[in-house]
Image 1 (cartoon, rainbow, N blue to C red):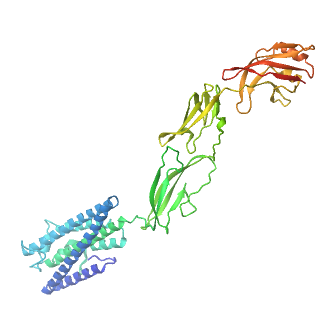
Image 2 (image 1 turned 45 degrees about the vertical axis):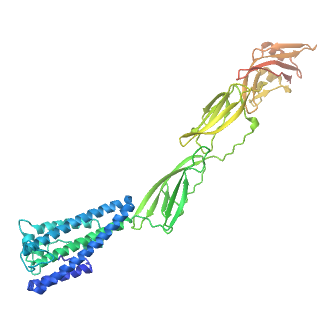
Image 3 (image 1 turned 45 degrees about the horizontal axis):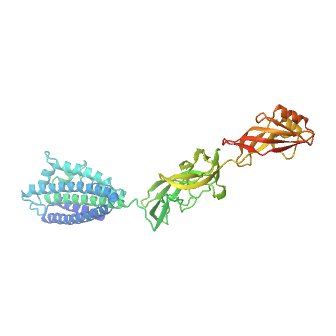
Amino acid sequence: MGANGTKQSPRQKMINLMYIVLTAMLALNVSSDVLDGFTQVHDGLNRSNSNFETRNSSIYSQLQSFAEKNPEKGRQWLDKATEVRNVTSALYGYVDSLKLRIVKKADGANGSPANIKNRDDLEAAAVIMLAPGTLRGRDLRLRIDDYRGYVSSMIPDTLKRHTIEEALSTAPIVRSGTLAPQLWEEAKFDQQPVVAAVTLLSKLQSDILYAEGEVLASLLSQVDAGDLRVNELNAYVMPQSRLVMRGGKYSANIVLAAVDTTQRPRVYIEGKPLDNSYGLYEISTGATGNFDYTGWLEVSHDDGTTTRHDFRSSYTVIEPMATVSATLMNVLYAGINNPVSISVPGVAMGDISAAMTNGTLVRDGDHWVAKPQTVGQDAVITVTANMDGHSVPMAATTFRVRKLPDPTPFIAFRDAQGNTDHYRGGKPFAKSLLMASPGLEAAIDDGLLDTPFTVISFETVFFDSSGNALPEVSDGSQFSQRQKSQFQRLARGKRFFISRIKAKGPDGITRDLSPMEVIVN
């Protein structure tokens, strides 16, 4: 046997001790008692091998059962176990064939390892195992070396791996009284009686079955090695959005979440760990828009390994809003661009569409411009939103279409600070400002419409000392030279009227405006 410091199992120690004692006795005298001792050991090994076979078959059946219930998880381990069983069976059968050859060499064609006649034959084992023409002993050694490397690579436990490597060792052996080491096959089968050689091969089969059992047990343990142990199960509903428009879809994933309350995963958001152990992510929102974030969970397993699970999510921040509208004010003015604001809470502006009857509706950035056509005919604006790839109607709002109200005529001037101001009559107006004004203008400038009009013509009416009216016609929207001459002759406190004012709006309609009184200061 090879000498090293590896700790052996009690079974291994017992078998090795018995084999050494019997071999020593055999070297002194191959008596019938010694041969009977080898026979008893051989019978015990056969019983041990039968028990190993039963144990290994039971472990393999567990792997089969698990793979049937959970193929995705158990199939890979069952495939490895099947390969181990096939490799073991091939080597075990090869050793069986060697036992049979040795016994038949000693007892003839009808020889059987279960009932050896010429137990003390010292030539049969050497002829079968060491004959130059066959070198079956060397072939067996090489096969054991391959098998030992194969099974050792599948056992993560260091102690068990060393035990198997020791049991299946084929290192050269130094016999007592010799200096040069002998090849493993020569030390085992040269000048050995048949019963000893067969017993040794049965012991080798026992070691092979033991190694197979350790590999199968290791594979079975690895089936659940990376599983998480949990002590709490909860059902969760995770909606894709808690805000759903009528006509849209409410989508939610209903999942079963399992946690280990004694060992929660570590959560990282954008590379930074959360400051709590419950996976609660909170952040203050200071701006509107869509925001994405990424992170991962680190989960520790019972086998000492750690796995990382990445995730990605997003959220949308919208302005606090409330829609307040006065029904009586749903009015659009014909012939001009009416600014319209359209929004759908929870829907991006790019996913909103709108259309209008009795006119045109055009998007202008995040706003819309409505331009109705026919006065007195209602215009209906219909809003739709793209939700989950479908166009969903959101609202339809009816507007009354009205003609633009008449503008107010005024004389534009600049005040002492250089700012433009409007004189609309009815109060004193400095003569110097009047003389500096080019003409008459008109507009709706109530802060809502702010619509300019074009003055086409107007008249100024002066009165002489006898009370006679002296009308003067404008030069379009400009004061004519005759009108300016009249302004020059006006004394402080005098007044005149601007009448027959005609102005045309952006709707193309020409209107007659009310006259205005100018008091010269």
